[in-house]
Image (cartoon, rainbow, N blue to C red; front, side, top):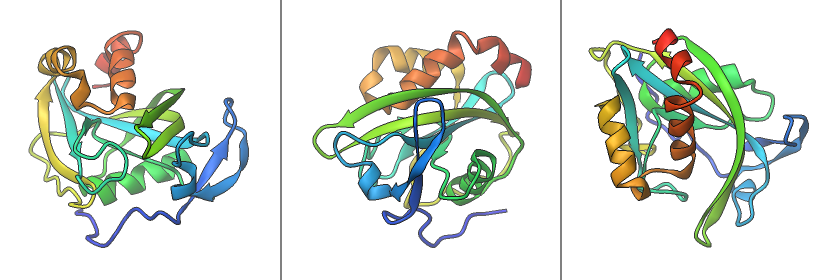
Length: 190
């Protein structure tokens, strides 16, 4: 399938502003939504598994304004104005990793994290999981992904315990949930 090598993320793209129960309040440009303090907006995170023992993680590009060079889940982004979570998550898998696979919604949560004085993520984030075979060709977009790999889940647990500061804050929250209250769902779906 492959990805497009043009830009896939723009400061001017309109993101969907919401309240804590996901009622739409309007839209605002991405750059404004991520200013220090942040504005609550829709987002999603995707975890791609190969069987029940391997998970695809990536290191964010050093060109990203927030959390550059940090490890995170397989893919994450935001629905744009007029775009559903489902459409946005599939669009972003193609753009960021050059792949497509069915996704299952697991849960949604709100969080806020500050990247020093540079900016803030304040998101109502839907978490999805999907499944691929390790042999599937992955073609990460260089503006989005600096490095990626398939990791043994037990090794990720150890890595998170030993070096939590190498991961994005949303990943740490999501990993705790996927390894805790949603672990049975992940096992059943992978």
